[in-house]
Length: 83
Image 1: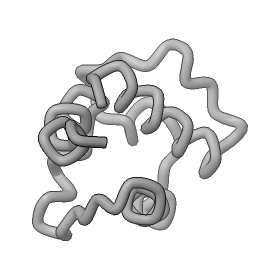
Image 2: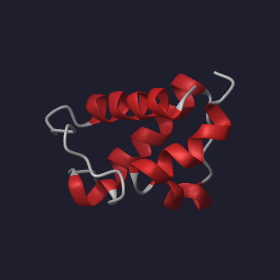
Image 3: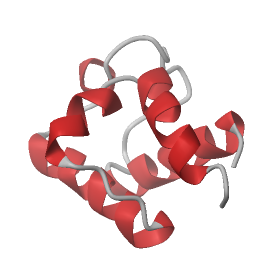
């Protein structure tokens, strides 16, 4: 997968979890939780969807890597390149 396709996959997952959020103006450098209403359960749902849809395991110690869109893409890129 490319950076763009990973971004699209993340946005799709977030849209499933918090469908009322407007994701069109996301700043890819700012923490997602500062821009959209994501609580800790929503965040865990995102991690679970990554595992379910793409078989990507994100250990708890790596959760900080998923704070911004850019850091999430950077983290997932090597794990999803072959998909």
